[in-house]
Image 1 (cartoon, rainbow, N blue to C red):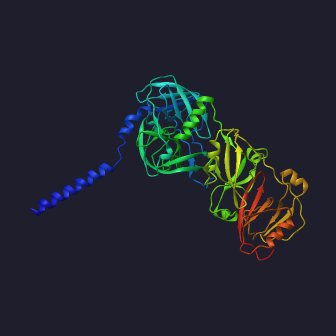
Image 2 (image 1 turned 120 degrees about the vertical axis):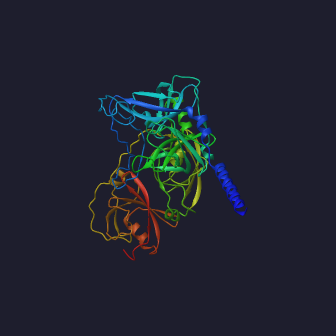
Image 3 (image 1 turned 90 degrees about the vertical axis):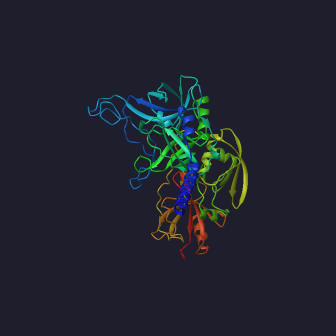
Length: 485
């Protein structure tokens, strides 16, 4: 009897555990049933064959860096490859290149969202639904900076997705992707939100949603759903050593995509704001040097002549901590916020300047595509042999010609950097413009003045130098000086 009671108790406990586990496991079936019909397969053809290799993200081609971001567009398998008729019959000649991607219907009258790289350069675009209907599509507009494209098919009464608010998305929340990985249409994968607001190399205008949803070549342009069946992102990139899924996937937030598609639909292009500043991240050392309470904001290295920022009174060495009522926590926040601001808008800006908060107003300009800045290089100058200062570098006064060429009113030229220099990031040919110590900014007007300033500082002093190198400007923090120059 005791044995029977024990077995009954164990059975009841096991049943309760199973029931509890089943209750807590997510059920994705309703999301797929309600929204799956609005997800489409997109195939494109080009008359000219392109390399089958997936393009690498610019700036990450170094062989030592194996991990890199890849956009993903698979090529359709040709004859003689798995998944195609004619397997084993040998390759057939082809005069065009094909690629696959995903997309989803956003309105019943045939507007479809996908990634810009899915349709880039396509001569023909075909949209295929789950019921096997196929339509030819035309590109309404594409924006490479956010990787969003709006295409249109000639159809009505189509199933369309619903959109959710990515701002309400929580890290750890379940999400679902539907797409065509490797051409397998309407494949469903699921996972959780790993992080929000991710910044990726060369992607300054998108605060990506990071997930661990399985995303592979062909998912590109497909929707990312929350558990309410609302689109909260567009799957766009993966982080991978192999080009396949490794647990790091990135989606463009739905609010960014909707703003872009609205502009593409109305004007065929996207207008972005710009203010004309060059910025860098504020480190803890920089924050201490500038007297800021903590590492936050975007440090202004330089201000473009005639730019909205210059007209508003923004200065190099300002730290922008707020823009249009939004907090700027890191330097990557500023391009997103400014870029999403409509050109012509008059917005309040909060800056940290010389130990105090200052509020100014900027009339936002418009970002021109593919702006290229020419690099001004300081002309070589022969210098008499001089002794290194307490940083272990030798500096000289700028000639009037050099000041004119580099559009500077002051600064000192680095002519030599000793092997034991305390400022390893400073190079020969750099121009030192400003010295910051305990929140005080000193404009460097001569080599003698600069060396005297260093001579009067404590051995353990932490200073920050504003360094101009070619067309770029940056702030370099130095901890500690030599006993004597």
